[in-house]
Length: 89
Image (cartoon, rainbow, N blue to C red; front, side):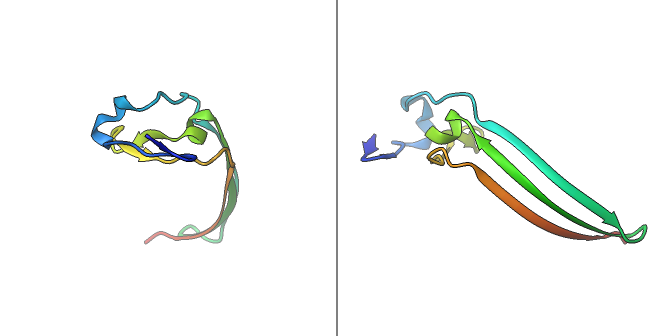
């Protein structure tokens, strides 16, 4: 059912009762670089961007084998910046 702009599932186990969402979840791109300081130590930095599709905008049952509802993003793209330090031993 709907409450204003919010879509609330009746019960996640009965996901087929909800409206069908688009299958287009979006596109994901990333850029990263890595510097190997030694054979056992590396440093990595990068940026990832999610171009949301209609499936992300509407929200859908994508987690928990299709039983957990992801509420949607209202069409906002997502960015993720990261810095990693890795050590092999």
